[in-house]
Image (cartoon, rainbow, N blue to C red; front, side):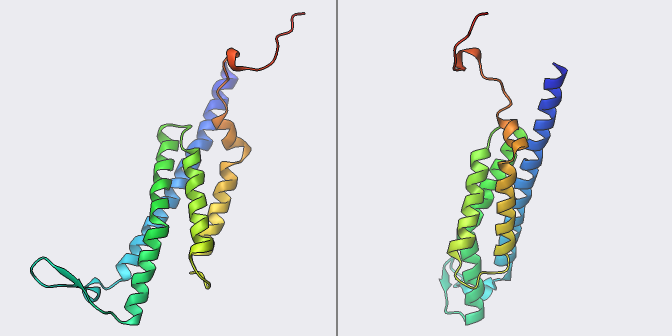
Length: 165
C-alpha cells in the first residue's frame, strides 16, 4: 500500500508540473497579445464622432502593419491561449483531465506558426514552435502517461482467461 501511495504522489507531481507549464505558456501567449494590441495607436485607427459612433479612417502603412499583426495574433493564438489555461487548470484541479485539450492547443499553435504566417515568419514563432514540440514530447513521456493510466482497471474489464492451478 505504501508503494502505491508513493507512486501516486510522484505521478501527481508530474501532472502538476505539466499544468504549471501549460498555464505559463497560456499566460505568455496572452502577454504577447497584450503587447501587440498596446503597440497599436487606437486614436489614429478609430475616430469617435462624439455621438457614440466610431468610424474607421484610412491609416498609414506602419499603423496598418501593427494593426494587422495584432489582429492575426488574436485570431490565431488567443483561442489556443484560452485552451492552454483551461487545460493547465484542469491538470492542477482535476489531476487527470485535460490531456486531450492540452495536445489540441499545442497542435493549434504549431499549425498557426507553421502555416498561417507567410515567410518571413515573425521572430516569436520559432520559440513557440520549439516550446510546443517540447510540451508535446513531455505530455507523451512515460512519467506523464503513467499518471493518466495509474488507476487499476476493474477485474471485470480485464481480458483474458483465469487459469486454475
